[in-house]
Image 1 (cartoon, protein in one colour):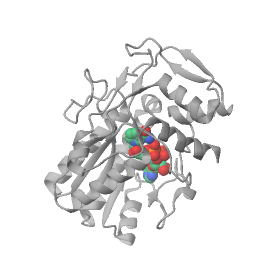
Image 2: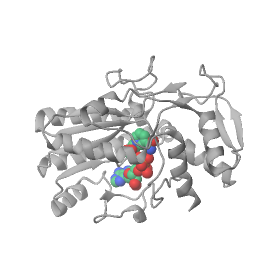
Image 3: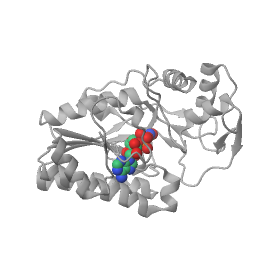
Image 4: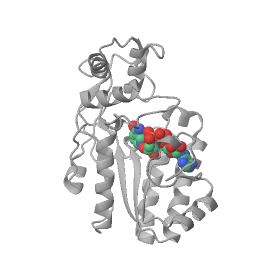
Length: 293
Ligand SMILES: NC(=O)c1ccc[n+]([C@@H]2O[C@H](COP(=O)([O-])OP(=O)(O)OC[C@H]3O[C@@H](n4cnc5c(N)ncnc54)[C@H](O)[C@@H]3O)[C@@H](O)[C@H]2O)c1
């Protein structure tokens, strides 16, 4: 495990050694590869706050794009063939039609999405030129926690809806802000496709097997194809926790599309992936078990 612990937590590292390394430090990345000689890489490291990226784009290009380039160069130098990369639905921007298939044009509307798209493009070239085999997994909204509540979301600042709704219910923070109630959706609030982190783990392992079996590189959406509105999430958090979620309705946030829902059939077809725990009540229940602890 390689992480600079800028956002991560040492206590979340349960298996294998942790090397405290910043991807921006090319020499350090190379020396860790030299020391540990990995067989394959799953690349999660990134800054991922859309709002921050609009204020400080350079941070996102340096950290996410240049950092990833260092990693890819290390892959080439140490002859590591396979890499699974955490991409995002933010690479699509604001598509005109739903659900979003992998062939939907990628037109990011913020530097975060752009920094990730640039990595996808680098992967294609490192594949063509150096033979790197890659999977770019475009996550939609990740939720839930380890089902045994050993590891869960621990972000500072927290920007994800389910943790924020749970915190509001617990009285750990002010009322939840509902950004926009006049969207062209059935209840007026924005719709997103939530995917359980546990199902995401499965998809990564299947993607790695797929690459190692020489079946080719791929981009694949990871979502369920079913969207949930902000109100639905609030109601579900209310019923699972048995507590009211206090909220305040505010204006829409710039750049928040009404609906983002995946067409995730490619991952199902190519990776034989089946999301098992990504129904909304289970995701909230697991998140709630974690936050209760
Ligand atoms: N959570 C989501 O809903 C979601 C959706 C789409 C994509 N993603 C992507 O999934 C990945 C994981 O997201 P997360 O929500 O767990 O975020 P996170 O912030 O918890 O995890 C990112 C990790 O990367 C590390 N890191 C950041 N910059 C680094 C650097 N330069 N060198 C070394 N380590 C560095 C952080 O310390 C942290 O441990 C990210 O790449 C993110 O963009 C997440």
